[in-house]
Image 1 (cartoon, rainbow, N blue to C red):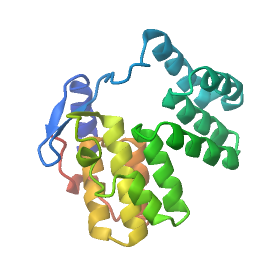
Image 2 (tube, rainbow, N blue to C red):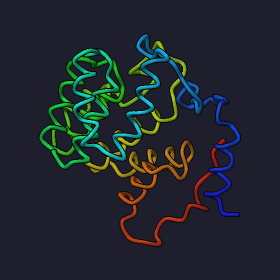
Image 3 (tube, rainbow, N blue to C red):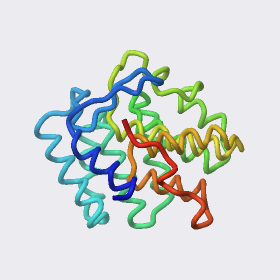
Image 4 (tube, rainbow, N blue to C red):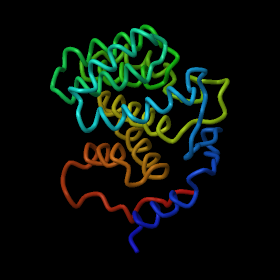
Length: 214
C-alpha cells in the first residue's frame, strides 16, 4: 500500500478525534467544529446546500447568496461562497470585490483573512499579505485565545503562508509548509496544488519520502 493511501486511511479512522500538533501547540479537529453564534441548525443546513450549489451551478447560487448577505451581513461564509460562485462564472472583478468586503466586515474570520492574503500575494502586496496573516505568520499567535482549529483552517493558513514564502523566495520556509500540509492533509487538493508549485517537474517529489501523519 502506498504511503499516500495509508495516510488517507489514517485520516479516515480519526475523523472526529482531535490530535495535537506539539510544535504549534493546538489541536487539529477533523470532525465538525462549531465556533460561531451564527452556526445555527438552519444556517448550517443552508451552508451545506449552498456548498453543493456553488460547485454544481454557480450562476444559480449568486442571486441567492447576494440575498442572504443582505439579510446576514455578519455571516462570513456566505461571502466565501459568493466569491467562489463568481469565480465559477469567470467574474474575477466581482471575486476581488467580495473578498475585500468580507475582510472589511469580518476581519476576525480566518478564511476572510486568507482570501485577502492570497489576493495581496498575487498583486505583489507582500506587506498587506503579511498583515492579513498576522505578521508573525503563526496561526496560534493570530488567535491566541484558541486551542483548536479545524483541519481546513490549518490547511488554508499553511497554504497561504507557503505562498507568501514562495513569493519572497524563502524556499526553506516554503518547504516546511509543504511538509506540514502532507502531514496534516495528505491527498487534499490544496496540498496537491502546493506540491505542484514546489515541484513543477514531474517525478521530483516522492510521497514515500514524507513522514506519515501522527
